Length: 244
Ligand SMILES: [Zn+2]
Image 1: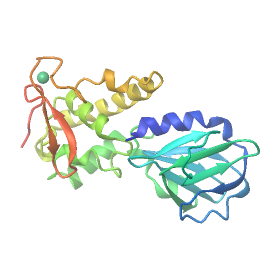
Image 2 (image 1 turned 120 degrees about the horizontal axis):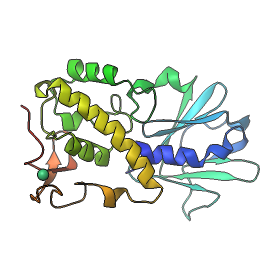
Image 3 (image 1 turned 120 degrees about the vertical axis):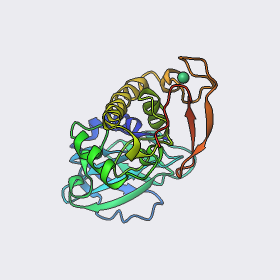
Image 4 (image 1 turned 90 degrees about the vertical axis):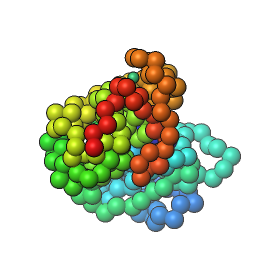
């Protein structure tokens, strides 16, 4: 599944279309596309795992979900769920969900929670974490896209390992210093993830995601679905402390 950095990577590939005129939009998705007709694409933005195509009074959010993909000037045999057409170019999305939004992205999304944005606000997120998610497992909260926009399973697993926190730890039991360090690890790792995408090296460079033993102490990792999110989780019992 694409995580925040993968979406930012796609956005960076599309920069040449900024300021270009979209002749029409197509695709079998149900979203109303009638307003996207000979209209200038003002900007391409992201919020977490959403790719945003910004027009004058509205924007379109594209979410790739678990199986979505994007092709530029190429087509798959199956129909695109959403496509933007330019004079001689096209951007095609497959198995993607699209949503029409009135207004600007900042009217709908809080950029303070986007782990890949300069606006990411550590104090804001820490406060929300401690006040609204105190009783939850940290491994679950990290997948909450309203608070950690852009975090996916790889970022979640690797950041918790770097911060030496067991994913089943309860937020209120984790020392504040540790939480602050975890937030830093998330942001740092997301940036590293983005760089690794250039060489397609994310999975090889991961320390425990997709691995069987801890690189530090050679302990066999616990690999199972944990918490409410039911995502495959990797943990080193020796390195990662359980706070309860
Ligand atoms: Zn270990």
